[in-house]
Image (cartoon, rainbow, N blue to C red; front, side, top):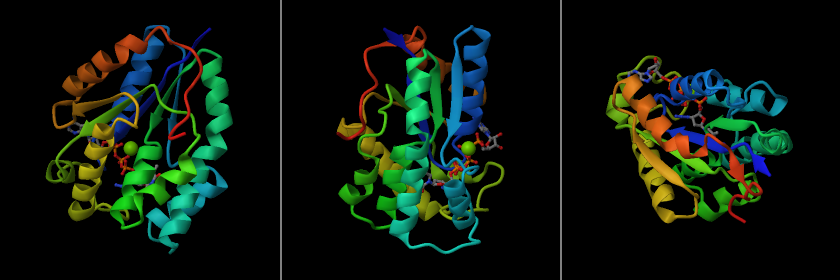
Length: 209
Ligand code: Z5A
Ligand code: MG
């Protein structure tokens, strides 16, 4: 049975993830490919509201506690995600467990501990890493309003994302130069996505089993 493809978009703050996710979704719909978009953190759920308050520095939380909330925010959507894929709908995720692992590891938490709560989540078929230099991202609108939006943190996160892709245990990982103009990034995103346009055979994998 053919199911929908599970595509994750990762990257630094202001790398253009939401812009590219929306553009890809619009193109999929225009081409008649059923597709849905999710964003993590999903700030609309009760767990997401706690994360939102933390990111906006309206609440303080222990590093481990907030890490577990980010993971729980994915788990609360996991069953729906699997059902959507099984129904033949392609799912795009704007950030996922790779953000969870690298942001908390860059704060000093042990890498293995950071991965553990996300083990067993639906595994993406493809992760698009929108790579941009932190100083380039910084020049874009809205930078600096939330926690983690500083160059030192973003530089550590970029390095950890690159290592995640090279490690081989993140599945298929394609790095896209996100410093280009929007339409050039969208073209590279489409090139990487195209092999998945007709869906995927076989079951959805499990992350970090
Ligand atoms: N976090 C975590 O710690 N643990 C987790 O498990 C998860 C997340 C899931 C909030 O994430 C924070 O949560 C994030 C990681 C952490 N902290 N940081 N950094 P978020 O996803 O809610 O927010 P964000 O990703 O940091 O920011 P963002 O605004 O959503 O960035 P974006 O989606 O990558 O960018 P954008 O909105 O598409 O574009 C930003 C601006 O640049 C906008 O004005 C665009 O018009 C412009 N833009 C976009 N593309 C281009 C190009 N190609 N050229 C020029 N300008 C462009
Ligand atoms: Mg975004």
